Length: 350
Image (tube, rainbow, N blue to C red):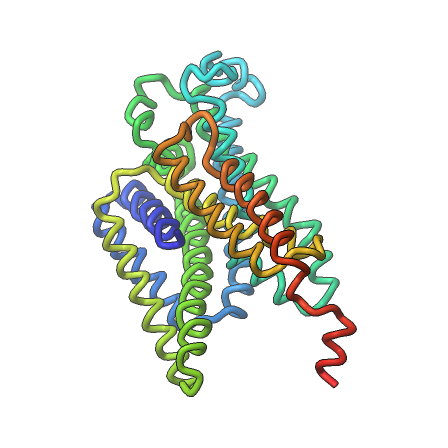
């Protein structure tokens, strides 16, 4: 599922470079691939965390700039008076409200349970860092989400239906269009920089987690004698291969960015969220419950996406429900938690 997520991000980068620089989609894809591959090859988790802070600031500035430009162009709060009723009502005249709610929930859940984000959270060594991030992280995300998710709505108060018609079926090129049209010369470069920063930081973290699972976790288990130098070299090679494969597949993907990201993030987050919460707060949970939850979440999401009604009920809701039931059932049937208590752990260490 991370591969699908990478495809969505690569598609977004290539579309943005195409719209902002006037180049072809393939050329934009190659530029994005080379930049991200170089960034990944020379960095590691500490570098990614530090640079993410800078890139996150750029993302926030770009989102606020784009949102502010729409508000100013629309005459301040008067822009809301110009919005068509079909855009703001909850009857689903344009898009089913269930689809919007499901996509928002799926992407938001990813902020709580994506493995690359969890690794960064659990790697904190100072409680002050956790407290700081626990306050300012949600605040910055809330501001960013408000700005970004409002762009498509506010645009209806400025542009005519004829201007927006090309983006109703394929919205991937919409943000470059707004940036070029509304922002002064030079400021649109900040939007490009912010988007590339988001892509680079996200992709590098995703590839780092994926390659670590494939090499350090699996290969180290199969072949414990492998040296650290060989493991590091193999990790870099596998990561570059994943980037190349994802970029290659991106050339022929008809799906739009948001549905791709929503589905992939939803599957990953749903599979991780249930065992994460129960593992932290329910003492009777165990490994059997985790495996059952993982399988049930993944299988139910995929099955509902193809054979259910995903537009009415987002697959992530089904995955969380099935995963929760599977975790509780399997844990209760297989007995007490396999994780030793603190006293038992101290005895074992002695």
